[in-house]
Image (tube, rainbow, N blue to C red; front, side, top):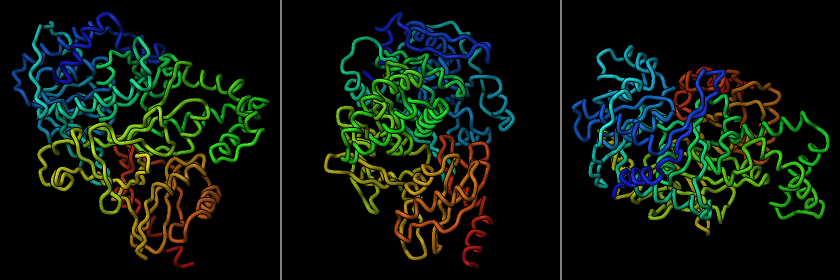
Length: 553
């Protein structure tokens, strides 16, 4: 049976238990939170399938799915795949011009939009677009009893467009075999985390379903019959997390950093004995990790675990949480240690869209801070030239949509060349160093991965949003810093970082930009990664000025 058949069979089995819960702030949106049972989801999928069947589409036709996360999104996604069509999920916050470019690349036969404003934005950019329908019209169709199509492992089921940090986005084709293997791996890891606990997993979710890792988490929850609570307003994350009371949920590092800072700020405002215990315990925890713990440190840790940390955990996420899962970018090891100190393991995942979102996953029984776990079952990972991570196995995509030359560059002799630098220790756990294409090559010939240095500066510079290093072909590194910080603060942070770096990695100049880089100003990709080439081109004059001033001095 295909992965899709297994999901539908699980939904039939789950029956009248709620599997999806849509969280809303009624005062802000005039919508109430609501849930849907597995049986109800199957009925909604049947409605969407009846609508699609009436459109005269053929197996393998593409259908674009443009909407914010919702129960309707889930039903539409399942319906498209159940009709033997290829779903093309798109990011609702992305600029209409970029969305149209992707759709023109994959030529969908139909565009399904969550709301009229999304439909209208596409229509303005693409007057002769394929037919567009909003969910409200699609789910008016009467449901129908339709058989699931046979899915071979090689059948493509989705095209997910990559972020495009240095150019045009490419459509990553994933087939049924890719997804089936990945769902087996993710569900197996979650079994280890949940330790065979009976009943439904309670999962919270806020990341857009159009991203590969987020989508795999969705499908895994459906396969497991979990109860998945969906955040629909990012400004309400804190309250929604507590309401969902999850066992686990998927995160990006930026949110965990914000959660950590929020606790610090709240305790500073509260003051008193709680703040004293908190500050002493943070220092005690780090000494313990370094093997320098004292008897007094044990006392502070015991006090915090009894008097402070339970309250912090309850207010932050609730009392049920067993672990946070984190992917999409490297997590600062200090942040991972911070949550471990609170008694919350952070399990890291590493992968790319081309690897069906995942290559490695932390084993909850053998967590090693600062690393992203061992390779998942059934795949091989090795190091190539420049310590580039290369991967092969059933999770590797068959190729980019209609781009054989691009495919040939990354798929060679059965190996996928990730473009990431990494290292593996004796225990088999991997650490991600950075992107090879982001390497800065100084005029001296030194190769420098910018990400670790940028991250360290951010840790020393509260208030900064981003740090971007430049210096290709130059005599030294310079930094662009965004956020509400003073030049004195930036200089102090750089001095602190420089003191631990060799001379060729030290930063000799910087500029501050109060406006952060964002998706809206074109400096970040859809999933929040820096468009370094775009930043360098847009700030060319400022970069030249940094080097001219320093050299003049």
